[in-house]
Image (cartoon, rainbow, N blue to C red; front, side, top):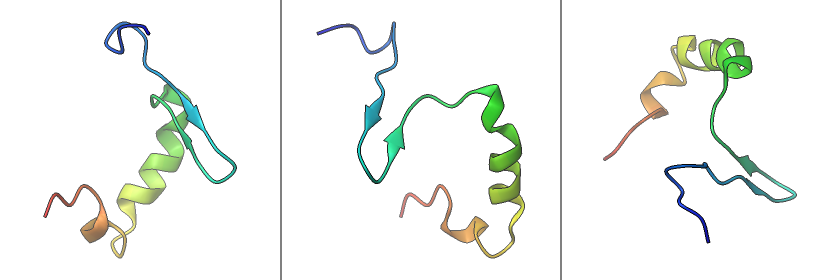
Length: 46
């Protein structure tokens, strides 16, 4: 096991990949966060 604060783990399945975001993700994230219909569902902690 390694320190997750030193190296972020990456998990891959057939359906999804969870990984640290990078600069290459900027355009896709901008599209998502600029979508007025999607924004209410993003980062909702309740």
